[in-house]
Image (cartoon, rainbow, N blue to C red; front, top):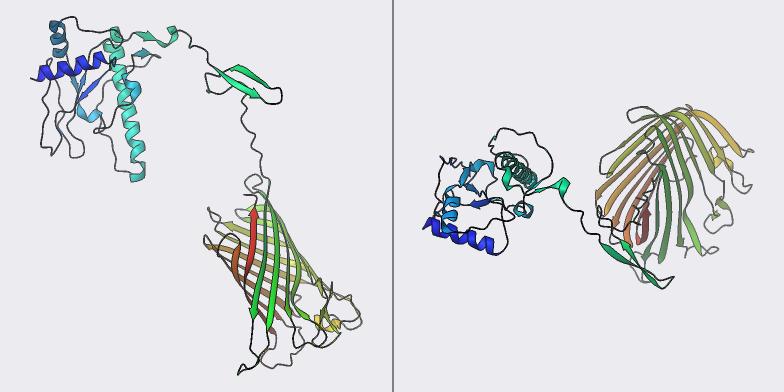
Length: 476
Protein backbone atom coordinates (compact mmCIF):
# COMPACT_ATOMS: atom_id res chain seq x y z
CA UNK A 1 0.00 0.00 0.00
CA UNK A 2 2.85 2.34 0.87
CA UNK A 3 4.46 1.74 -2.52
CA UNK A 4 1.22 2.45 -4.42
CA UNK A 5 0.59 5.76 -2.60
CA UNK A 6 4.17 6.92 -3.11
CA UNK A 7 4.00 5.96 -6.80
CA UNK A 8 0.86 8.05 -7.28
CA UNK A 9 2.50 11.06 -5.59
CA UNK A 10 5.61 10.77 -7.73
CA UNK A 11 3.72 10.32 -11.04
CA UNK A 12 1.54 13.34 -10.21
CA UNK A 13 4.67 15.37 -9.54
CA UNK A 14 6.23 14.40 -12.86
CA UNK A 15 2.97 15.06 -14.74
CA UNK A 16 2.80 18.64 -13.47
CA UNK A 17 6.43 19.40 -14.30
CA UNK A 18 7.67 19.76 -10.71
CA UNK A 19 10.96 17.89 -10.21
CA UNK A 20 11.93 18.32 -6.57
CA UNK A 21 15.41 17.94 -5.28
CA UNK A 22 13.91 16.58 -2.06
CA UNK A 23 10.51 15.41 -0.92
CA UNK A 24 9.45 15.62 2.71
CA UNK A 25 7.13 12.92 4.02
CA UNK A 26 5.63 13.38 7.45
CA UNK A 27 5.48 10.02 9.15
CA UNK A 28 4.23 10.92 12.61
CA UNK A 29 3.93 13.78 15.07
CA UNK A 30 4.40 13.68 18.81
CA UNK A 31 0.99 13.38 20.37
CA UNK A 32 -0.68 12.86 16.95
CA UNK A 33 -3.60 10.52 16.42
CA UNK A 34 -2.87 9.37 12.89
CA UNK A 35 0.37 8.06 11.39
CA UNK A 36 1.00 8.09 7.68
CA UNK A 37 2.56 4.98 6.06
CA UNK A 38 6.32 4.98 5.59
CA UNK A 39 8.09 4.23 2.31
CA UNK A 40 10.22 1.15 1.91
CA UNK A 41 13.66 1.71 3.33
CA UNK A 42 16.97 0.15 2.44
CA UNK A 43 20.58 0.80 3.28
CA UNK A 44 20.00 1.04 7.01
CA UNK A 45 17.85 4.17 7.27
CA UNK A 46 18.39 6.43 10.26
CA UNK A 47 15.33 7.80 12.04
CA UNK A 48 15.88 10.36 14.78
CA UNK A 49 14.10 10.00 18.07
CA UNK A 50 11.39 12.69 18.46
CA UNK A 51 12.15 15.41 20.95
CA UNK A 52 9.79 17.40 23.13
CA UNK A 53 9.98 20.41 20.86
CA UNK A 54 10.24 18.93 17.38
CA UNK A 55 7.98 16.34 15.70
CA UNK A 56 9.46 13.19 14.21
CA UNK A 57 9.80 14.08 10.56
CA UNK A 58 11.33 11.61 8.13
CA UNK A 59 12.87 13.37 5.20
CA UNK A 60 13.20 11.36 2.02
CA UNK A 61 15.73 12.62 -0.51
CA UNK A 62 14.73 11.49 -3.98
CA UNK A 63 17.69 10.54 -6.13
CA UNK A 64 16.38 12.10 -9.29
CA UNK A 65 17.59 14.02 -12.27
CA UNK A 66 15.50 17.10 -11.60
CA UNK A 67 15.56 18.16 -15.23
CA UNK A 68 14.89 15.02 -17.28
CA UNK A 69 14.07 11.94 -15.17
CA UNK A 70 10.93 9.98 -16.09
CA UNK A 71 10.44 6.29 -15.16
CA UNK A 72 10.18 4.04 -18.20
CA UNK A 73 8.85 1.03 -16.30
CA UNK A 74 7.48 -0.02 -12.97
CA UNK A 75 10.76 -1.83 -12.32
CA UNK A 76 12.66 1.45 -12.54
CA UNK A 77 10.15 3.10 -10.25
CA UNK A 78 10.46 0.24 -7.76
CA UNK A 79 14.22 0.51 -7.84
CA UNK A 80 13.97 4.25 -7.37
CA UNK A 81 11.64 3.95 -4.38
CA UNK A 82 13.89 1.36 -2.79
CA UNK A 83 16.81 3.79 -3.00
CA UNK A 84 15.18 6.40 -0.75
CA UNK A 85 17.41 7.41 2.14
CA UNK A 86 16.51 9.24 5.33
CA UNK A 87 18.01 12.28 6.99
CA UNK A 88 17.65 12.81 10.77
CA UNK A 89 14.56 14.86 11.56
CA UNK A 90 16.38 17.32 13.82
CA UNK A 91 18.09 18.78 10.76
CA UNK A 92 14.78 20.43 9.83
CA UNK A 93 12.82 23.04 11.70
CA UNK A 94 9.56 21.35 12.66
CA UNK A 95 7.16 21.44 9.73
CA UNK A 96 8.37 24.69 8.16
CA UNK A 97 7.34 25.03 4.49
CA UNK A 98 10.15 24.58 2.02
CA UNK A 99 11.20 27.61 -0.04
CA UNK A 100 10.15 27.58 -3.68
CA UNK A 101 13.72 27.83 -4.96
CA UNK A 102 14.47 24.41 -3.46
CA UNK A 103 12.27 22.73 -6.10
CA UNK A 104 14.17 24.17 -9.06
CA UNK A 105 16.69 22.10 -11.06
CA UNK A 106 20.04 21.74 -9.36
CA UNK A 107 22.63 24.33 -10.40
CA UNK A 108 26.23 24.24 -9.23
CA UNK A 109 26.96 27.86 -8.37
CA UNK A 110 30.37 27.69 -6.68
CA UNK A 111 32.78 25.33 -4.98
CA UNK A 112 32.01 24.50 -1.40
CA UNK A 113 34.24 22.89 1.17
CA UNK A 114 32.67 19.56 2.03
CA UNK A 115 31.92 19.36 5.72
CA UNK A 116 30.79 16.38 7.71
CA UNK A 117 27.02 16.22 8.09
CA UNK A 118 26.30 17.51 11.55
CA UNK A 119 22.62 17.26 12.52
CA UNK A 120 21.59 20.00 14.92
CA UNK A 121 18.57 21.02 16.94
CA UNK A 122 17.73 24.72 16.49
CA UNK A 123 17.66 26.71 19.72
CA UNK A 124 14.52 28.82 19.99
CA UNK A 125 14.96 29.80 23.62
CA UNK A 126 15.75 33.42 22.82
CA UNK A 127 13.39 36.35 22.45
CA UNK A 128 9.96 35.36 21.06
CA UNK A 129 9.97 38.24 18.59
CA UNK A 130 13.15 36.84 16.99
CA UNK A 131 11.79 33.32 16.50
CA UNK A 132 10.90 33.93 12.86
CA UNK A 133 14.50 34.94 12.15
CA UNK A 134 15.95 31.92 13.95
CA UNK A 135 13.63 29.61 12.00
CA UNK A 136 14.71 31.10 8.68
CA UNK A 137 18.40 30.79 9.61
CA UNK A 138 17.92 27.14 10.57
CA UNK A 139 15.99 26.41 7.38
CA UNK A 140 18.60 28.15 5.21
CA UNK A 141 21.36 26.15 6.88
CA UNK A 142 19.49 22.89 6.22
CA UNK A 143 18.95 23.74 2.55
CA UNK A 144 22.66 24.46 2.09
CA UNK A 145 23.58 21.16 3.73
CA UNK A 146 21.23 19.21 1.48
CA UNK A 147 22.64 20.86 -1.64
CA UNK A 148 26.20 20.17 -0.56
CA UNK A 149 25.43 16.51 0.05
CA UNK A 150 24.00 16.11 -3.46
CA UNK A 151 26.89 18.02 -5.09
CA UNK A 152 29.52 15.71 -3.60
CA UNK A 153 27.74 12.37 -3.35
CA UNK A 154 25.64 12.37 -6.55
CA UNK A 155 27.06 14.93 -8.98
CA UNK A 156 25.26 13.20 -11.88
CA UNK A 157 22.04 14.82 -10.62
CA UNK A 158 23.47 18.32 -11.08
CA UNK A 159 22.52 19.28 -14.62
CA UNK A 160 23.73 22.88 -14.77
CA UNK A 161 26.75 24.99 -13.93
CA UNK A 162 26.19 28.67 -13.32
CA UNK A 163 29.29 29.62 -15.33
CA UNK A 164 27.98 27.76 -18.41
CA UNK A 165 24.42 29.03 -18.38
CA UNK A 166 23.34 31.13 -21.39
CA UNK A 167 22.97 34.86 -21.02
CA UNK A 168 19.56 35.95 -19.80
CA UNK A 169 17.38 37.60 -22.46
CA UNK A 170 17.33 41.36 -22.41
CA UNK A 171 14.27 43.18 -21.16
CA UNK A 172 13.03 46.61 -22.09
CA UNK A 173 10.67 49.21 -20.71
CA UNK A 174 8.94 52.23 -22.20
CA UNK A 175 9.65 55.76 -20.99
CA UNK A 176 7.22 58.53 -21.91
CA UNK A 177 8.65 62.01 -22.51
CA UNK A 178 5.69 64.48 -22.49
CA UNK A 179 7.90 67.41 -23.45
CA UNK A 180 8.90 65.72 -26.75
CA UNK A 181 5.68 63.75 -27.27
CA UNK A 182 7.72 60.57 -27.65
CA UNK A 183 7.92 57.10 -26.14
CA UNK A 184 11.48 55.82 -25.75
CA UNK A 185 12.29 52.12 -25.41
CA UNK A 186 15.15 51.55 -22.97
CA UNK A 187 16.95 48.45 -21.80
CA UNK A 188 16.08 47.34 -18.28
CA UNK A 189 18.95 46.92 -15.87
CA UNK A 190 18.99 43.20 -15.05
CA UNK A 191 20.83 43.68 -11.78
CA UNK A 192 18.39 46.12 -10.22
CA UNK A 193 15.30 45.70 -12.36
CA UNK A 194 15.34 49.47 -12.92
CA UNK A 195 16.12 51.53 -15.95
CA UNK A 196 19.77 52.44 -16.58
CA UNK A 197 18.99 56.11 -16.06
CA UNK A 198 17.90 55.52 -12.46
CA UNK A 199 19.92 57.42 -9.89
CA UNK A 200 19.62 56.99 -6.16
CA UNK A 201 18.19 60.11 -4.49
CA UNK A 202 20.74 62.27 -2.79
CA UNK A 203 20.19 62.47 0.95
CA UNK A 204 21.37 65.80 2.29
CA UNK A 205 22.82 66.06 5.75
CA UNK A 206 20.91 68.29 8.14
CA UNK A 207 23.58 70.22 9.97
CA UNK A 208 20.98 72.48 11.61
CA UNK A 209 17.84 71.35 13.41
CA UNK A 210 15.04 73.91 13.50
CA UNK A 211 11.73 74.02 15.32
CA UNK A 212 8.94 76.60 15.34
CA UNK A 213 5.90 76.98 17.58
CA UNK A 214 3.18 79.59 17.35
CA UNK A 215 0.04 79.82 19.46
CA UNK A 216 -2.86 82.19 19.98
CA UNK A 217 -4.80 81.53 23.18
CA UNK A 218 -7.90 83.14 24.64
CA UNK A 219 -9.70 83.34 27.94
CA UNK A 220 -13.03 85.06 28.49
CA UNK A 221 -15.27 85.86 31.44
CA UNK A 222 -18.79 87.30 31.56
CA UNK A 223 -20.37 88.59 34.78
CA UNK A 224 -23.99 89.71 34.85
CA UNK A 225 -24.66 93.17 36.34
CA UNK A 226 -26.54 91.65 39.28
CA UNK A 227 -23.86 89.06 40.16
CA UNK A 228 -23.84 88.85 43.96
CA UNK A 229 -20.04 89.21 44.19
CA UNK A 230 -19.78 91.86 41.50
CA UNK A 231 -17.01 91.78 38.91
CA UNK A 232 -16.25 92.85 35.36
CA UNK A 233 -16.43 91.20 31.95
CA UNK A 234 -13.00 90.56 30.48
CA UNK A 235 -11.37 89.07 27.43
CA UNK A 236 -7.73 88.01 27.47
CA UNK A 237 -5.52 87.18 24.50
CA UNK A 238 -2.08 85.61 24.65
CA UNK A 239 0.14 85.21 21.57
CA UNK A 240 3.39 83.26 21.68
CA UNK A 241 6.02 82.75 18.95
CA UNK A 242 8.97 80.44 19.57
CA UNK A 243 11.86 79.62 17.24
CA UNK A 244 14.82 77.35 18.00
CA UNK A 245 17.85 76.40 15.91
CA UNK A 246 20.68 74.14 17.04
CA UNK A 247 23.66 72.36 15.55
CA UNK A 248 23.13 68.67 14.83
CA UNK A 249 25.44 66.85 17.25
CA UNK A 250 25.23 63.67 15.14
CA UNK A 251 27.49 65.36 12.56
CA UNK A 252 29.28 67.71 14.98
CA UNK A 253 29.75 65.74 18.22
CA UNK A 254 32.42 68.09 19.59
CA UNK A 255 30.43 71.31 19.23
CA UNK A 256 27.36 72.71 20.95
CA UNK A 257 25.45 75.63 19.48
CA UNK A 258 21.84 76.57 20.14
CA UNK A 259 19.87 79.79 19.79
CA UNK A 260 16.30 80.45 20.86
CA UNK A 261 14.15 83.49 20.07
CA UNK A 262 10.77 83.99 21.71
CA UNK A 263 8.16 86.72 21.79
CA UNK A 264 5.11 86.71 24.05
CA UNK A 265 2.33 89.28 24.05
CA UNK A 266 -0.65 89.21 26.38
CA UNK A 267 -3.50 91.73 26.25
CA UNK A 268 -6.83 92.09 28.03
CA UNK A 269 -9.65 94.58 27.93
CA UNK A 270 -9.71 97.17 30.71
CA UNK A 271 -13.29 98.12 31.63
CA UNK A 272 -12.11 99.82 34.84
CA UNK A 273 -9.61 102.01 33.00
CA UNK A 274 -11.19 105.29 31.93
CA UNK A 275 -8.25 106.20 29.68
CA UNK A 276 -7.17 102.95 28.01
CA UNK A 277 -9.39 100.36 26.33
CA UNK A 278 -6.93 97.54 26.88
CA UNK A 279 -4.07 96.63 29.14
CA UNK A 280 -0.83 94.80 28.30
CA UNK A 281 -0.42 91.94 30.74
CA UNK A 282 2.61 90.28 29.14
CA UNK A 283 5.18 91.66 26.71
CA UNK A 284 8.56 89.94 26.39
CA UNK A 285 11.12 89.59 23.62
CA UNK A 286 13.86 87.17 24.68
CA UNK A 287 16.89 85.69 22.89
CA UNK A 288 19.09 82.99 24.41
CA UNK A 289 22.24 81.52 22.90
CA UNK A 290 24.75 78.87 23.95
CA UNK A 291 28.02 77.95 22.27
CA UNK A 292 30.30 75.22 23.55
CA UNK A 293 33.32 73.04 22.77
CA UNK A 294 33.30 69.50 24.13
CA UNK A 295 35.46 68.94 27.20
CA UNK A 296 34.27 65.50 28.35
CA UNK A 297 31.27 63.24 27.98
CA UNK A 298 28.22 65.58 27.95
CA UNK A 299 30.31 68.48 29.27
CA UNK A 300 31.29 71.56 27.22
CA UNK A 301 33.35 74.68 27.75
CA UNK A 302 30.66 77.22 26.96
CA UNK A 303 29.64 80.80 26.40
CA UNK A 304 26.05 81.71 27.29
CA UNK A 305 24.12 84.86 26.50
CA UNK A 306 20.65 86.20 27.21
CA UNK A 307 18.87 89.35 26.07
CA UNK A 308 15.32 90.39 26.95
CA UNK A 309 13.20 93.50 26.74
CA UNK A 310 9.66 94.76 26.44
CA UNK A 311 8.56 95.98 23.00
CA UNK A 312 5.31 97.95 23.45
CA UNK A 313 4.41 100.75 25.80
CA UNK A 314 2.60 99.70 28.95
CA UNK A 315 0.67 102.29 30.99
CA UNK A 316 -0.47 102.51 34.56
CA UNK A 317 -4.20 102.21 35.24
CA UNK A 318 -6.15 105.46 34.64
CA UNK A 319 -2.90 107.28 33.86
CA UNK A 320 -0.64 108.31 31.00
CA UNK A 321 2.44 107.35 33.01
CA UNK A 322 4.50 104.55 31.52
CA UNK A 323 5.14 101.30 33.32
CA UNK A 324 7.57 100.00 30.70
CA UNK A 325 8.59 100.40 27.06
CA UNK A 326 11.24 99.21 24.61
CA UNK A 327 14.60 98.73 26.42
CA UNK A 328 12.98 100.13 29.53
CA UNK A 329 13.80 97.84 31.07
CA UNK A 330 16.27 95.91 28.92
CA UNK A 331 18.68 93.30 30.19
CA UNK A 332 21.76 91.57 28.74
CA UNK A 333 23.64 88.79 30.52
CA UNK A 334 26.74 86.99 29.20
CA UNK A 335 28.93 84.41 30.90
CA UNK A 336 31.76 81.92 30.43
CA UNK A 337 31.74 78.54 32.12
CA UNK A 338 30.65 74.94 31.62
CA UNK A 339 27.49 73.38 30.17
CA UNK A 340 26.09 69.90 30.78
CA UNK A 341 23.90 68.45 28.04
CA UNK A 342 21.78 65.29 28.32
CA UNK A 343 19.09 63.72 26.11
CA UNK A 344 17.66 60.21 26.25
CA UNK A 345 17.59 58.00 23.16
CA UNK A 346 14.02 58.78 21.99
CA UNK A 347 14.55 62.52 22.65
CA UNK A 348 11.55 62.66 25.00
CA UNK A 349 13.60 64.04 27.89
CA UNK A 350 16.35 66.65 27.68
CA UNK A 351 18.23 68.50 30.39
CA UNK A 352 20.78 71.32 30.09
CA UNK A 353 22.68 73.03 32.88
CA UNK A 354 24.99 76.01 32.34
CA UNK A 355 27.17 77.45 35.09
CA UNK A 356 29.12 80.66 34.41
CA UNK A 357 31.36 81.76 37.31
CA UNK A 358 32.39 84.80 35.28
CA UNK A 359 29.33 86.75 34.11
CA UNK A 360 28.43 90.26 33.04
CA UNK A 361 25.00 91.86 33.47
CA UNK A 362 23.78 95.05 31.78
CA UNK A 363 20.46 96.73 32.61
CA UNK A 364 18.98 99.64 30.66
CA UNK A 365 16.16 102.14 31.08
CA UNK A 366 16.38 104.57 28.18
CA UNK A 367 12.94 106.21 28.55
CA UNK A 368 12.85 109.52 30.36
CA UNK A 369 9.24 108.85 31.41
CA UNK A 370 10.12 105.83 33.55
CA UNK A 371 11.80 105.82 36.97
CA UNK A 372 15.07 103.84 36.59
CA UNK A 373 15.24 103.03 40.32
CA UNK A 374 12.31 100.63 39.81
CA UNK A 375 14.74 98.40 37.90
CA UNK A 376 17.72 98.67 40.25
CA UNK A 377 19.37 101.47 38.25
CA UNK A 378 20.70 104.49 40.07
CA UNK A 379 18.69 107.67 39.76
CA UNK A 380 19.84 109.91 36.92
CA UNK A 381 21.45 107.04 35.02
CA UNK A 382 20.11 104.89 32.18
CA UNK A 383 22.33 101.83 32.55
CA UNK A 384 23.93 99.72 35.23
CA UNK A 385 26.87 97.31 34.87
CA UNK A 386 27.44 94.37 37.19
CA UNK A 387 29.88 91.45 37.30
CA UNK A 388 29.18 88.22 39.09
CA UNK A 389 28.06 84.66 38.42
CA UNK A 390 25.07 83.18 36.61
CA UNK A 391 23.43 79.80 36.11
CA UNK A 392 20.71 78.45 33.86
CA UNK A 393 18.83 75.12 34.02
CA UNK A 394 16.50 73.94 31.26
CA UNK A 395 14.32 70.84 31.21
CA UNK A 396 11.99 69.41 28.58
CA UNK A 397 9.86 66.32 29.20
CA UNK A 398 7.37 64.75 26.80
CA UNK A 399 5.03 63.04 29.23
CA UNK A 400 2.77 61.64 26.49
CA UNK A 401 2.31 62.07 22.77
CA UNK A 402 0.19 65.19 23.42
CA UNK A 403 1.48 66.40 26.82
CA UNK A 404 4.75 68.28 27.32
CA UNK A 405 6.33 70.00 30.29
CA UNK A 406 9.15 72.53 30.12
CA UNK A 407 10.93 74.36 32.90
CA UNK A 408 13.64 77.01 32.98
CA UNK A 409 15.54 78.53 35.90
CA UNK A 410 17.89 81.49 35.46
CA UNK A 411 19.80 83.17 38.27
CA UNK A 412 22.38 85.97 38.49
CA UNK A 413 24.18 87.47 41.45
CA UNK A 414 26.77 90.22 41.77
CA UNK A 415 27.36 89.10 45.37
CA UNK A 416 25.51 92.19 46.68
CA UNK A 417 22.09 91.34 45.25
CA UNK A 418 20.51 88.38 43.50
CA UNK A 419 17.74 87.79 41.02
CA UNK A 420 16.18 84.58 39.71
CA UNK A 421 13.42 83.57 37.29
CA UNK A 422 11.62 80.23 37.25
CA UNK A 423 9.28 79.55 34.33
CA UNK A 424 7.10 76.44 34.02
CA UNK A 425 4.86 75.54 31.08
CA UNK A 426 2.52 72.55 30.87
CA UNK A 427 0.95 72.08 27.42
CA UNK A 428 -1.88 69.77 26.34
CA UNK A 429 -2.45 69.28 22.61
CA UNK A 430 -6.15 68.60 22.02
CA UNK A 431 -5.57 67.98 18.33
CA UNK A 432 -3.24 69.26 15.65
CA UNK A 433 -4.40 72.88 15.91
CA UNK A 434 -5.97 73.19 19.37
CA UNK A 435 -4.13 73.22 22.67
CA UNK A 436 -4.42 74.38 26.25
CA UNK A 437 -1.59 75.67 28.40
CA UNK A 438 -0.76 76.39 32.02
CA UNK A 439 2.04 78.90 32.51
CA UNK A 440 3.56 79.85 35.89
CA UNK A 441 6.37 82.39 36.20
CA UNK A 442 7.99 83.11 39.57
CA UNK A 443 10.60 85.84 40.00
CA UNK A 444 12.76 86.87 42.92
CA UNK A 445 14.80 90.09 43.02
CA UNK A 446 16.45 91.19 46.23
CA UNK A 447 16.75 94.76 44.89
CA UNK A 448 13.01 95.15 44.18
CA UNK A 449 11.48 98.17 45.97
CA UNK A 450 8.99 97.33 48.73
CA UNK A 451 5.45 96.49 47.59
CA UNK A 452 2.34 98.20 48.95
CA UNK A 453 0.84 94.78 49.65
CA UNK A 454 2.61 93.41 52.72
CA UNK A 455 1.81 89.82 51.68
CA UNK A 456 4.11 90.12 48.68
CA UNK A 457 7.65 91.27 49.38
CA UNK A 458 10.44 90.05 47.12
CA UNK A 459 8.67 87.14 45.39
CA UNK A 460 6.63 87.89 42.26
CA UNK A 461 4.24 85.40 40.62
CA UNK A 462 2.36 85.30 37.32
CA UNK A 463 0.00 82.46 36.34
CA UNK A 464 -1.94 82.05 33.08
CA UNK A 465 -4.38 79.33 32.06
CA UNK A 466 -5.40 79.55 28.40
CA UNK A 467 -6.80 77.59 25.48
CA UNK A 468 -6.57 78.33 21.78
CA UNK A 469 -4.91 77.64 18.46
CA UNK A 470 -1.40 76.28 18.03
CA UNK A 471 0.87 75.44 15.11
CA UNK A 472 4.18 73.56 15.22
CA UNK A 473 6.77 72.33 12.77
CA UNK A 474 10.26 70.89 13.01
CA UNK A 475 12.99 69.99 10.51
CA UNK A 476 13.15 66.41 11.93
